[in-house]
Amino acid sequence: MKNLLLIIGVMLLSITGFSQNKNAHASIEVDGVCGMCKERIEKASIKAKGVKSAEWNVETHELKLIYNEGRTDLAQIQQSIADSGHDTQDIKAKDEIYNGIDDCCKYRDPQVVEDHKDGGH
Image (cartoon, rainbow, N blue to C red):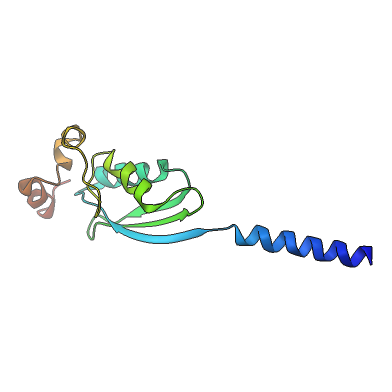
C-alpha cells in the first residue's frame, strides 16, 4: 500500500512539474532596417525575463518569440524593445531613445529605409 501511495505521489508531482512549463510562441511586428537593428531587437527581447528565444527577420520585420508566460508577457517584451529604440506593433519608442540609435538604423526616415532597399547596410 505504501508503494502504491508513493507511486501516485511521484506521478502527481511529475504532472504538476510538466504543467508549469508555460512556453508560449508569438510573433510581433518590430520596425528596423538592418543587421544592427536585428542585433539590438533580439538582445532587447532576450533581456525581458522569461524570453527563451527571439529571432527578428529584416525583410518581414517579424519577431518570433518563445517565452515563459509565467515570467513575462508580450507587453513587457514590447516595452523592452521600445526601450532599445525600436517601435513595435503596440508600443512606440520614445523619441529621445530613437534619436540615440545609429543613423543607419533610423527606420522612421524614409530615405534610410530606401537606402537599405538599394543594398545599403
